[in-house]
Structure formats: C-alpha cells, structure tokens
Amino acid sequence: MHAGPVAIEQTEQGGAGDPAESPLGALLPGGRVRPGTAVSAGGDMPLLLALAAEASAESAGWAAVGLPDLGALAAADAGLDVGAGLWVDEPGRQWPQVLATLLEAVPVVLTGPVPPAPARIARRLAAIMRRSGAVLLTAQPWEGADLFLQVSSAVWVGVEHGFGVLQGRRVTVTATGRGAAARPRQADLWLPGPDGSVRAAALPAEPASGARVPAVGRPALRVVG
Image (cartoon, rainbow, N blue to C red; front, side, top):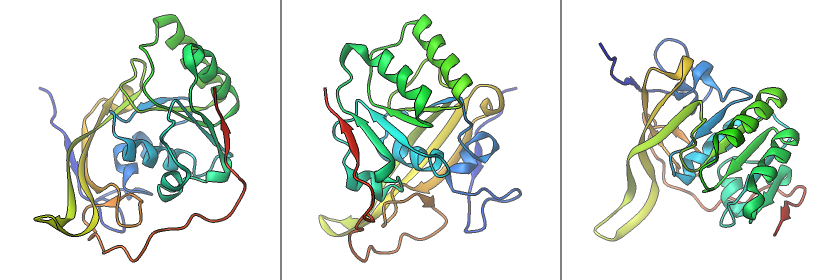
C-alpha cells in the first residue's frame, strides 16, 4: 500500500518531533541538502534560490549557470552571499563541460534550463559530484536528481481587488526522490516571505518595512559568453 504525503507544519521551534534547522529542512533527507547530490526545484525560481541559500550556508562559494536574469539583489534577498557568487550567463553548447568544471571547484552549482543530458553525461556529472561533494541544484527537472521538489500551489498574499501591499507568497511544496527521500513529504511555506527569505507558513507574513539592501562585500564575479 502506497503511503500518502507526510504533511509538515512547523513553528519557530521546528516541526513536531525532531526539529528542523530551517523550514526547507523538513523536506530534505536528514534536514539538509546532502553533499554529492542533485536536487530539482521543479521550475520555481524562489524555491531554487532558497535551496541554494540552504546548501551554501556553510560553503565557500556558489555558481549560477544559464541564469542570466538572476540579479545580485534577488540572490542577496534569498540569503546568498553575493560576494561568493560566480555567474556563467550563457554556457552555450559546452554546458556539460561548464557544469563539470564548476562541480569540481565550487560547492554549490545552480543551473537554469538546459537540454536533456545524455545518460553518459549525467553519469559523468554524478560521479564528479560524488567525488567532490558538490551539490547541483537545477531549475528544471533533472533525470539524475536524487530529490525532486515541486511547488504544487501558490498564492500571493496582501493584495485584494488590485489594492494593498504584497506580504509574501504562500506555497505548498512537495518532495519525493530516491532512497531516503522516496517517501513523499509536503510543507506549507512563505516563499518568499516579506524579507525575501523562506519561512514556515505557521508564522504570519508581517508587512515588509522596506526593501533590503545587500551588505557591501566582495564584488560578484560574472562570466559572459
């Protein structure tokens, strides 16, 4: 008999039972993005950025490949260290080689839409991730992903009948995958909340008090072409 999704409702102390370090942790095996794995964000950019912030919290850097519309302000609002970021806006036909090179050198790599990877390329990238411990986070479905996340419903809160102030986007995220992630899970989140970060939907979306200004640090390094 197939088990249904596990509903997760968190408070500031985490979910019932074993507390998670973050709202997204309740959807991840072991409460975190495991090194050496690939995770698909199901085409949702805020979810992709939240995963990147989660995965890079204790790492030395991250890279974005094929995401030319990703700006520094959006990355900073999601919790990423902009000074530690590397952008490769247009990897072109050499995207497998670009990903392979970055996965050898950077702990967390985000990628936008890319062509379906042939089986031999997917196996090669998976072997590199296992060896280096790097994490690959993909905007679109990825055939070799260990974990698949999907925003199954989303609604913006704060504007009614065309008037008001956006407070955040309330979403339901489902997760499934292989191995420890085979049992489906589900969580209600603010993604993003008023300050651009992710939080459990059990917490209210407080009105935003103003735009966040990213901290001054090292300039972002962007590779074009």
